Image (cartoon, rainbow, N blue to C red; front, side, top):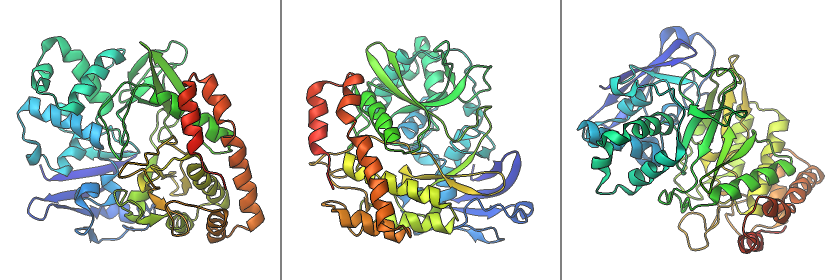
Length: 432
């Protein structure tokens, strides 16, 4: 298969064809959609009859596809699951091109885009309750690519766990192992977030606690990491930063971090989204190559309101002060409504990410005022000026963030993070 149709909200918006020789995808908008005035990718692929192709984009980040489409591909964990499934089916992963991976994701992509035809072996639906302990064990096997993996995938006693993890884990992006789930807060039951669910279930993302082998961008999912991310979410909200509701799910001594999906409405309808990486082809794998100033420029080009830009300034300050140094271009996203209007998505992946000996997180991924470390107050003031904010307004936003971050030790203690770890993290916080 080298051709896929792309749909949005039930309508065809275009098609992508894979060229196996050039190893790139060619995308064209459908003639009817060209008249819609709905700009899905306004900066890199505005509506026209152009056949779009981007051979110069980093294949490790965009996989030969335009950002609009590559954003729907899974990241390391999801791809590892797909590769494991391909092995079970006797298919060489090198023969499974990115368009086929989009069709494997099919109607389960994050955001609102859907890819047809959905591959036959990706059409399974698992509607029973999900058991986390079994799929966490399987997730570790997949990521470690243990020699026993093929035997595990063909073990009839693990058929249910395999179905569960393939359905909830293959379409989620990001560095950490996660699942797209439907959760009932009243009963605490978990089901796949990819099927129609009964009343009382909501769409959430669950990040597995106890996964020890992701190690993407210096990030290792050691047990207890969910506690830190949950505490950071509380601290961010205290700083006036907009995040969707978050929750800690306790299970067998593990604490799984959960956050409500912002690409789904309360009744399960899909919302179109794009990361900053996809929106302007700003490669998230190029540490330090892109800047917060560039992000503000993109926001202004999308005609986002000043409310969103001020929110973004607060996020920049929060990341600097609290050492969230995995602040790359895939960790900023935008949402589009059916009228084609864009807004800044709620903050996500807000957590402690600092490894002074690491390749990635020893410094920030995006620069401010030309710096990825050793920031001073004037750097944030300069960022505010780029956003047309007065010095006094920028300082007010910064002070709001500082007040939230000052709550770290109190909030972390309430979350039962060990005291030595609370102190260790606190000692690395910056002051401006």
